[in-house]
Length: 434
Image (cartoon, rainbow, N blue to C red; front, top):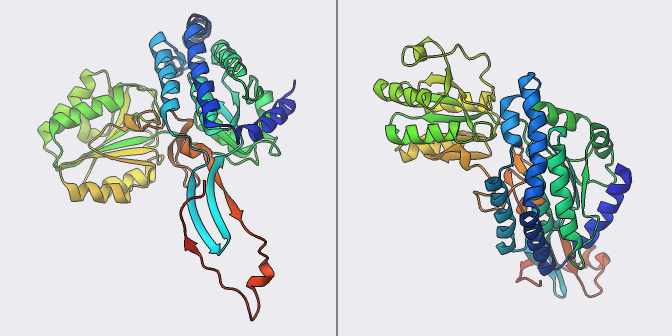
């Protein structure tokens, strides 16, 4: 079966999913979770095959270490993913919610109702845990999905997709073609050309992937190009808090897109505090890139070549700024509109920063690593959007729904509402019908 045929079947499945009972979707999620636990050894064994090939690629300089780390699927990480699937069961169904209700006239009511997007194509790199995460979100939100993973995770993706597909097939009423997996770049290109079937494309990867997808499809694209996240340390920041948050944001998972990549130090923050913070980062294995003013405080590997740099490893750009407005200007100019943070004890200063920084996530005294659908309580995420249409930030269940208008009438016609003797509309807000 070629990509077009798979897409056509998935599109047909999407119509069934749109009207699927919440209980059926939750049974499908429980079946997925159970199947992944039962077949955990097979999934992890498949991941080891991918890791062996990836290790050779790293040794030959064909793959970055950060990509290798993203590829790892441990038993602990798999169990975390499985629990995320189970937690989705406990969340309310995002489909069929009444978003607004208006009486247009007596006996004629208009309802704005949440509904699935339809058929979604997801292209991602390296991280095999994307397969169950997106599959689960698609099930709960009533969407069909076609997944295209990177060749570096081929065996793992296959094992996960097969396990999930078999689990979904065991649920009465769940359409068999709702989840599809493709493998090659040629298939990916074919998918991007099928605008008659796909309603949305979500790329998860680096700049090159995002740019390629946007340049080669007419289908709407949701995603973010990169994660150049910042932390601004204001004059009133507490040293201990700054050290804890900056170390977590940089070292807890260096290859993640919500890892801090640039540290902005207010020049009025005590120099002894600046030294201590930079020393703490270095002690935790972080390499600093900065100018001579920072080099006077801590060992620096060299100057910053490009302030719009996503290192994806234990490296960070450091700069001194005069005040919060200069920090904001730097972030809006060089950031990626992903997630940025201010460390301060001054509420008004925090509000200035949070109002003026143009990012999907703006934080006060908290690690940028919290920018995640699971941590936000979305169950999981299909990715993080830095755009300003439809969905922004971690895209979970709500971001995978759109809406339709349902009009309930009683024989009304437009002709009665135009002309000299036109009937007036009441346009009165009413309670929900569904």
